[in-house]
Length: 505
Image 1: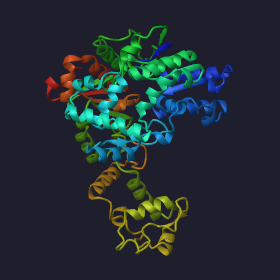
Image 2: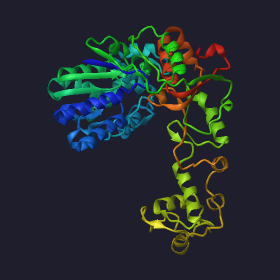
Image 3: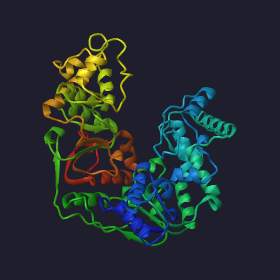
Image 4: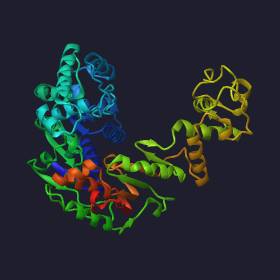
């Protein structure tokens, strides 16, 4: 394996994609190349780029541009209908008398059905032990899970028996099956590209080594200084200690010099790391220390508001709403698409313009049937989603009683009061609330891979992070290194009220 180290903003993924382009231009066949990413989104972006540039069929020609999990699914004996889903976990919960919550989609690949997530504490613990390739009792002893050992052991035993009886597999089973069957199920490749290698677990590293044996050349890219998923099983030391050649992409195209200086101060605190040269872009940038979020003007530019723990962002979201800002929070827009489309659509209708049937249905859903819509018309079942309709048409043919004299707040009486106040604040500020937010409030982990003109960083630590700082500080240093290196122009640092429980910047 050949390692490519990509510090923040150096274009690590772009470098890999350029290498894919070069390989295809040289005559290597698409099916002889594997591009493996951690998320479906990243894998699909790579697939679409190659397909567009070389006029390829993304699904047929680039079948090995995917996640590790989906690679395991398509190459082993496991069929998609054999994968544990929500219904199976629910059935298991009822059978054993232990609630196994937190089920949801992994978002790993379109080929995969919905599977249990690690947000369930017991299932997450079991899964983590398997990813780390350690005994479950050891993982339990290292954890702070509130369940007793007998319960955890019981669930593990029942889960194994249930899967065997029903001939089912969970997503970790896929990885384990690939490792077992690699000698005959792993395709032969001329080139393999594996991104975000610092986040691989020991089990995933076994897959990486199997791929290396079955390929002429393999490149693994990542940045050990950005390895912030140890809690999820990532083994950054395996990446650092990997034998073979290595190259560092040293020039950042994102981080300005003043922010870079602070980033270098943080990274110097990490004891276990691969030494590398890292240069800022020519812009100076600015690092400022402020007391509150109100101290900054967020009227223009893109913004990331970051905190180590999610609960530190709850008052931030409240303040942003009260000030009439549109923003992303926990992966969602601050106002639902349904409400924003309905409000915008109604105002379009009042101006004599057409809206789609889909938007019209959203408008109707925000109206009571009493004096806004005639009985029997609430679902607009006679209108196709793609059909264009006017206000006059809806009044004449589709039971609409609300008139154009009514503004959105009068017509759509089912919009909650809290949302009404927020929409009013948005309009007062002049925000285009049906557009893309310029502002994102996120945990640092959730912002990995992102960037913004301006970053606001809270230094507060959760009790768990503060405790972890005492015995494994490298992990927290990496988290705050990731945070500051999201910055393209200005970094604003808000120090915690309790200096004994805040990260020292």
